[in-house]
Length: 437
Image (cartoon, rainbow, N blue to C red):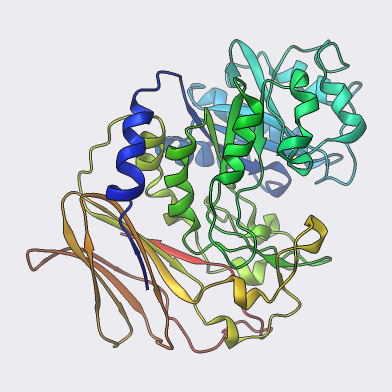
């Protein structure tokens, strides 16, 4: 059993330091535009409304090349943001790997053409007076395009914060003159371990005074057909990673992701299976993640050093609904050798348990009961708390409750935990079901 109270241990002291920081901070969410083929302007408007409601400042529009879906959906996104009044912003992240080809710097349908078309929009996010731009990779010969005086920045001055994580902290040192900041894609732990912020601090050390964008993600299970499928440990990651933002204290946080269903770290709504990569729908359908957004207003307020009034008790909880050994791995591995990691059984990476957080207006007891098994009680402090509890062979519908002075102030249930997989293909579903009250 893993027990921690982030109010007293992980949140309280770092928040004091964060409060003293006067620099403006921003929280973004990563949107895979390639997964929005069925979106209309109205769909984008709904996404923007949901994101803005939990304190997210902007969507990072990840765009692969070539993708015929991109022009239409970028136009829809900007139209929706502008119609909403443009308090919510958008910015580009040019994906040099996701579309099968690298982005051309200039010409039609290029980095420069997109920036020139949209930088003047009231909805485009600017920092230090310049359009903020990021990437997913784009190393090698493409780095020269982003150099000061290079093909892109000579045409459009930008505030450039790339993700060149494949180079590592020491590898980006020679390119510091090319960038204004850096985004670290390394936000999932290696193997059967929990995530730490040591890599974030290594990047910060290399960057010096340049800005840092930290990735925060709740989960990872790559399930798209046509290639290798793998898992990285999620489990306590959503709670742990937000706590680490207070220790790292970056200028920017990027939540990964809003809608990457094939990697199982989506926090946005699922509109249609047509927007889910082939092979992933069986693992995504019936597995909502929207409740992960419930605590984002609190987490962002603490990250920005702002006050937050906890007006009522809340809980959120998540788990895969059957033990890992209750189905076949179906070729899924833990870690990815293509990313210089040692592969191992996914069942050693993923823990069989329920993971749950409570945001409490004052000290209270938190009760967890799986099926008709005995209730397990936890002592919760005012503020944020997080725990995990192993299945230990228990099955049934989990019930989560907050009890104060013998009175239940809130309660909710999850989907049934079964002894074996319920998927028609017999595979273990390493995705998470997420709920809240």
